[in-house]
Image (cartoon, rainbow, N blue to C red; front, side):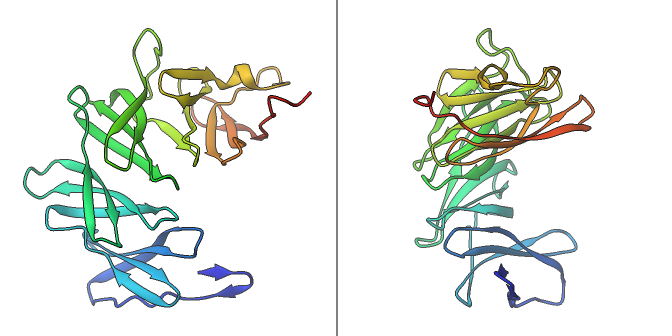
Length: 247
């Protein structure tokens, strides 16, 4: 861990079969989500805070677990397999209670993937069948999925095959990029609303597109790239949100 000009190594109790380890995420209070793995990519997970290392246990029903995000409440999210059915699953885990919740897909979209958890405890997800026409939305704290848009519909005739490029912030503002099709991105402020980002940008240079949004902060500012269809970077940009009350 790096703090200022100081570096601190995290001491993991590594067994002889471990071939690698890394910190996958860090929240605002300095809690690091740390993993180690063997040659077959079997993962062990720890939380590291104030020189204390706590091993995580996601329960007996999840195998091949890989946790990759932690919010400021200490909630961890990841993916794995159901030991009974063998299906791929997504999960959220509360280390304070030891409880793990499986994030179930919809009857009309029987597969799911998640991108991360924000500090409200909501999880950005995409539900799908055969990697086509994703349901983009959020899982709430109870594990209920709220659809913002459904791809491939008359209202939103886009497809993010093979997977969606999405980001969101703590205000549940979602942005999705279609860099490999129409080279633009859409803001999803609430369920049922999709705004073409290019229409919202003041003084967008001719021939430039908000093709790919890499991140969005809680003010709505966005960092991104203009890329061509082969993902060659043409330009880099920072979009600053303009207050609706500003002149």
